[in-house]
Length: 72
Image (cartoon, rainbow, N blue to C red; front, side, top):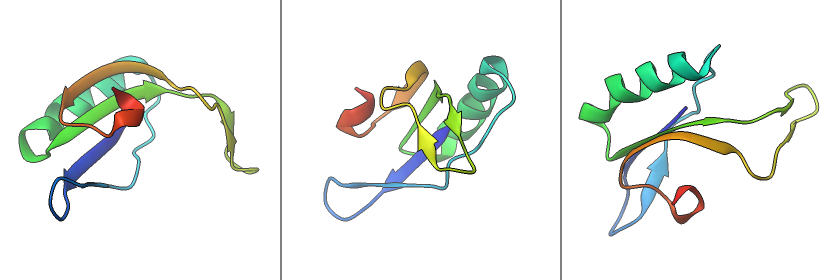
């Protein structure tokens, strides 16, 4: 789950990503944060956190608000 705040001009600043144990948990967290953020996205991505290797194309579960082009 990733939340975004307004940056300078039209830019967005990403908050630190939040890991969730399930798609449902990611959706609940995104909906809870949506009222205080410019945008939130819940997505699923597989990879190896120890190696820092993740999918190039995450599966988007939920979009709310204004998001970077990568999540449109």
